[in-house]
Length: 442
Image 1 (cartoon, rainbow, N blue to C red):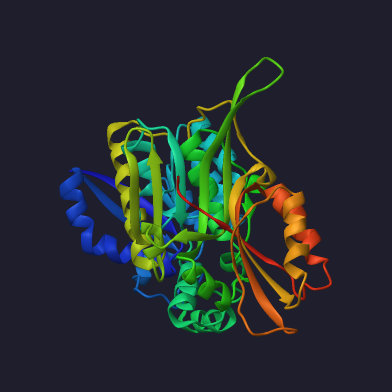
Image 2: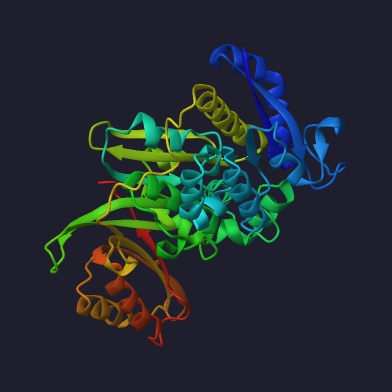
């Protein structure tokens, strides 16, 4: 049986998980593939760093160049994270003509085009299934299983930390700060937690999925991002009363086709956004709880599909890395690059600015309960041509500050933002308005 020799950079949580599951299932993989995978050398930060699974000392080195530059190493796995040293490692390996496997969503999101160009120039390949949604094979699904589809809608719960926090807030009626502190204690959230709770981790993953689905590379700078810091238990309670659940969603959907004046070319515009969203309780994504991830994909041929599983962790991510190891080994064994890392195929695509995106809205205002307040608020919304679908206001608090909940009809984000800015300046409004978008999945 042909053998392919692999080196790995990173022996921490994910790296040791890859080693552990390769030890357990490497023989099974060989019998299924007809190719033996040999994990020969692992570069680590320190020999004695804590790791969930033990790695034999004889396999380790603290010098990543000993792995990448070793002529016996045919495939390189990068699992150190970040966009500095990781980029240098990946480019060095690709320039040597060695295929690279990575779980690094920040690196792919920020520098994907440069890395793909290097892979093409040096006749190597770049595999990154583990960069999005952990153990869910969503990249392979979009590039291969659903290759015969045009993707009209894609919605992703792709950050387990945020999903864990929002799930507990809903189920326990807890405040955001309390659940976040507990999540950090349990190891579900980092310290500081900004990358997760401010939406940037989900931004990286959503941008990658948008690029693959629509054929032009989406820069992180083009993605509108909002986190979950401003959501309170009140919002959870009112959303539930209205028949909704709040989730942090990565959203990718086609908005429209328009003709440019110059040349009359048709341009496909897509929304690419990350923000907390009210989801109808009856929708399947409303029931994705805890640290689990899910990606909902609508194709013109296949219809609606859902991919669900663990989105992070040593075992789920290791499963995705092992899948890429299998693909890379088979490509090497057969002297081919069956699926290139990214193939641009939509030259007329563009990301629409968030101001052009039309949504329905949930708005929570803290207002003084006295006559005339509603008239002032509705006058501003009416001038902006934004209709009100329903209103909730607790009774029996005349003269006090109370929450006022508005469910609003479809309106452009730009118009909504201007109206809210005016409402916030009203003397009767005593706190910054909270605005969440509502998704109907139509």
